[in-house]
Amino acid sequence: MDGTGECSKVGGHHPLSKIAFCGDDFYNAKKAFSISRDALGGQAIHNAITGHQISLYKSFAKEGERLSLEKMAKIEIEAMVRAGIPKDVATGWVIKALEDLKKQGVKYITNIPWGGTN
Image (tube, rainbow, N blue to C red; front, side, top):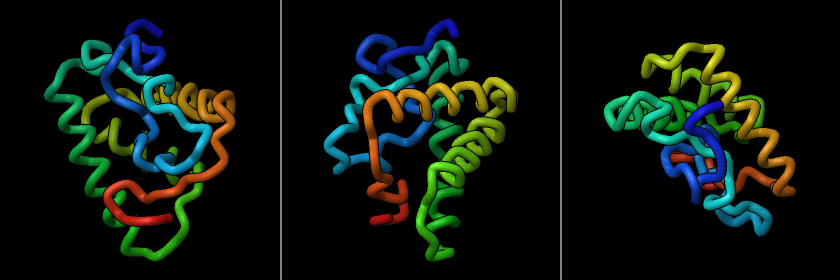
């Protein structure tokens, strides 16, 4: 996966929104799997993904449910697809990010991004 890797090395976009894990002692955003802006297709695509994330997470938060990793993965894939990333590519990035969470030992989704405490 060209242009992907540890955030401290490639920068860019976390395919699982990092704010969701703030407060989990095991989560390290700088070591988390990330996608460089170039691999995304540029800053405009990154901005579009963020816009779709905001919309999708705010809608989810209004439902009043707890955010699970399964639901989070669906939201993140949908945000990337809406921004023009092919679904298979978005899915691969999210799977890699989920594997990274497991490797880090992350236990909790502490926040619903743009939607409050989980």
